[in-house]
Amino acid sequence: MQYHTPKKQYIKAIRVGIHPFSIIVFNKESQKFLVGILTAELLGLLHESPAVIDTFSPMQRLKIRDVFAESFNESLRACTYVSAAAVVASLIMYQRHPPDVLKRKKEQGAYDEAKKAAPSLR
Image 1 (cartoon, rainbow, N blue to C red):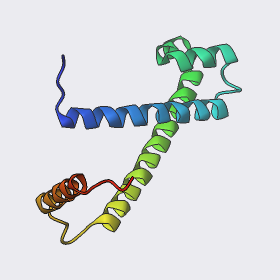
Image 2: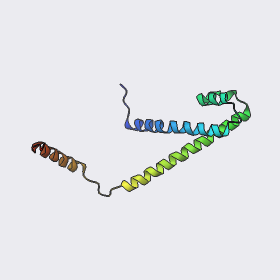
Image 3: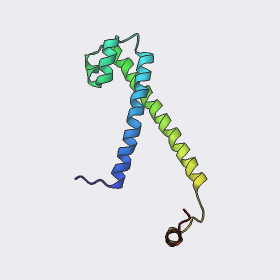
Image 4: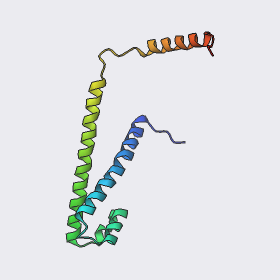
């Protein structure tokens, strides 16, 4: 059994959420900008593994590099927007005097006990 610290779990969750989005952005950008430069077969190979870039001509490599850079910028821009929305949401939900958790837990326990002790109305 492998144990992870919470920090590692958060990083893994972030990667799981960002990686598919980055792939979608790259595929969209490559379909838009590489259609006339690469054949459908070469484009499919590029989507499977970026290691095939070494087999392309220098002009194709340059264009592919531009597409990678543009898709990376687009992904980071989206991450920035999500982060900004998270900051706004946390500011909206901020409480200057949050309720006491232990007090609330005791109240909930007392409510549960009263509910068990009361006769059922069914």
